[in-house]
Image 1 (cartoon, each protein chain N blue to C red):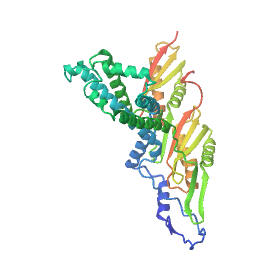
Image 2: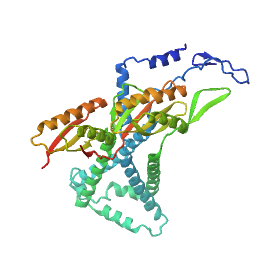
Image 3: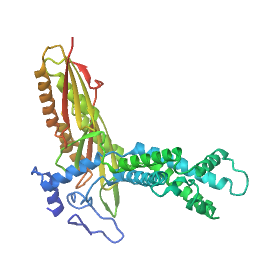
Image 4: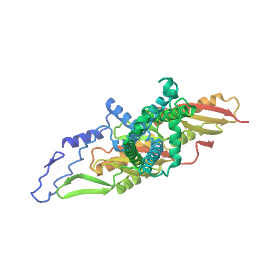
Length: 208
Length: 227
């Protein structure tokens, strides 16, 4: 048997995962489900392309001494250039630019949350994730299975970090029901083995 | 020529005859994070957002500082187009430099927009090592259909879709499954890993087949419903 076949055989034997392997699997899962930031990127790319295109048009249109066809833009530019820095419109424009820029930088630098709840696999070659909608539906089924529950509304917020469950019941003074639903849902979440278990918040509403 | 520990002799100018049992899986060259290609657009987006945002922050902060009097009362009262900006605009080459920079920025922005649709998919998968007699390949769609068909044999899986990314020699599998509401996702991904994905890895003679299983649940309960 070659060394490669031995390695392959070793990989198939059900040995416990090493701590380093678990860490690698965890890092891989977190990275795979990070958001692509496609929407902010597309909006920024279109805006930059439009502004850049207008700049090219303005600088090249009046180059040969002929009157510029973009008189509206030329007028706006000359009005802005004659405005003092302390004028309210200049201050507002500066503030807007700084705020938009800061938003873009923060969007890029903050880790963000994807649309999936990453599950723990302890296998560097297997990444598993459940969509937020899937998580919501599975937990809704679980909560509806509790005796005494009338109707259920589940919302998954903050990129699968918080699960809010609104339970409606006809039973009076049913504080215990909320605790029971919370326990059942928590157990279901544990069974899924998420990398980061979401916070479960149950709100009970008594119907007339 | 030594391949995977098995010695295979190739006659000069001739064709290697297959000898004995299969030489085993192809040694993996995957190092570190296996889905780098899939994250390339994400990395580019982060860079683009920072490169777009930073000049805006700097210009905005400079404008606020000038208008707020932090750079002196004379600067605050001066027009936006005056001072050093006026000097720069008076330079005869300024329009050409501005046009060139604007053109580069515009082309970069259009390219940035176009890469949002990049898929990085592999259309054909190679099976085993290449030999002097040629190479064996299989359409990625056929391999994906086989995995999905095997996965869908599980009654907890309603439907699925598979595609491969990165390279044809060492592909990465992306498996999207739609489960029934009562399915246990943790059990389903384990079954997929040990069943269809392991079979495919062996069929493709790969040491590693990094796989991403993305699961959703069918049903239109919308998270609401009566008991």
